[in-house]
Structures are given as C-alpha cells and as structure tokens.
Image 1 (cartoon, rainbow, N blue to C red):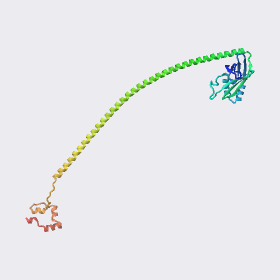
Image 2 (cartoon, rainbow, N blue to C red):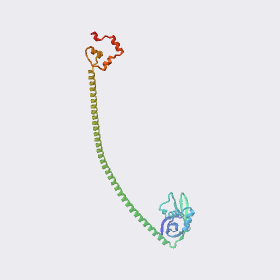
Image 3 (cartoon, rainbow, N blue to C red):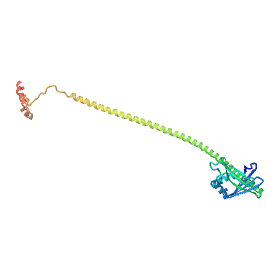
Image 4 (cartoon, rainbow, N blue to C red):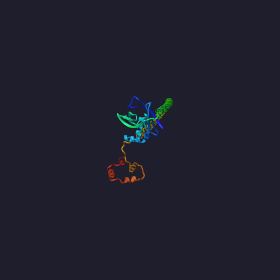
Length: 298
C-alpha cells in the first residue's frame, strides 16, 4: 500500500490550510482513496478503477496519460517515470464544495481549465486518529527523504572524490605523455641527425666516385685520341716516303725490239715477241718502209 500526504490550497477557501492524503494499492489507475483534513475535521472518499477509466475516456486521453496527471495533481509528484511528458506544462487547482461533500481537481494549461475528476467525501469516523496517521506518514516521508538526501550526499561526495582522483590521474598521464613526447622527440632528432650525416657521407662518396670515373674516362679518351693521332701521322709519313721514292722519268720511252738488238750485235733467243715482230702490222710496215734503219745510218 502506497500513500502520500501533501499540503494543498483550495481555491474556494484559500484562508484555510488543508492536507490531502492519497493511498493506492497498485497505481492510481486501479483506484485510490482520499483523506482531507483541515487540522480539526477530516473527510474521506474513494475513487474506483471504473471511475478512473470513465474519466480518461471522457477526456479523450489514454489511461496512462490520465494516471500521470492524477499523480501530479493529487500528490504533487512527477508522473510515470518521475518526469513530465515532453512539451507538457500546467498547474493544478482544487475546489471544495461549501458543504465539504465534494472535492474536484483541475488542470490549468494555457489559461484553460480542465477538470480531471472529483470525489464524494464523507466525514471521517475518527478525525483525530486520521490526523495522527497523516502526521506520522508525513514524518515518515520526511525521514525517507532525509535518508535519500543523505545517500545522495554520500554518493555526491564519493563522485567528487572519484572525480578528483580521475583528474589527478589525468594530470599525471598528461605529464607522463609530455615527458615521453619530449624524450621521443629528442631521440628522433638524434636519429635524424645521424641519418642526415650518413646521407651526406654517402653523397660525398658518390660525388668522389663520380669524379674519379669521369677523370678516368677523360684519361682513357685522351689516350685513345693520342694513339689515333700517332697512327695518322705514321701513315702520312709512310705515304710521303713512298711518294718521294718514286720518280717518274721525264725521258721519252724507246721501244726496243729483237731486231734492234741483232743490229747491234746482241743475240737473243727467239721469243713469241720476235715472232710477233716479224709479222708487223700494216702501219708498222709502212713506218719501217719510210724510216731508215739506225744501223744503216751508222
């Protein structure tokens, strides 16, 4: 059995302080009882589950939504899951009939008043006992709230300590991270400088090797050029010597035959040329006929 006690202001009797207690078994949708007290007198009433359903149907809302509105109106608590529905805003008011026989409750939203329901009241058989119960229930509720408040304070203190510990660890991790970054950066710079020095050394070695290769190729080229030049000079000198050793005779060529040799007393063997000489051509015969022989002149 659950119950709540709250202080309410009745619009029809604002000068009197009233206390309202609501008791229910499962939820307000399954029915509930009301107890109203002004400190001297007390009244009680009951709302059944059918009446709750009928009121929800009359307003055109779902049962769950209507129960949330009832919980906020009668207990001052928050509906459903402990929070208002998104976009919902409004106030609640109570009206008590002059004869104290009917209590109605309304919801005011955007200056529009909607009656959520009403309950028929009956005078309580023992107002003093009812007031005592309401006071005890209120004290118990205060103690429960104080206990919850203490628990929340302890939880808040624990969360603050945890937060401070996490912040301290975070600061320490940040410092360790910065130290590690500086160390890694110094190592990286050292390794980078070593790599640069090694690269410069390799570049110098490569340039020296390239220079020596170029110089060697130049020397080989000059040697081959010298050998080619000496060869050309030698061939030119040889050609000059050959040309110098050859002297072309400027004297006219004299044709000597076997007959001429015989005329001078020189015996020669018979050769095919003699046979050819013995058979001169017609021109040669004509020539010999008109030209005197040298032997006759002598």
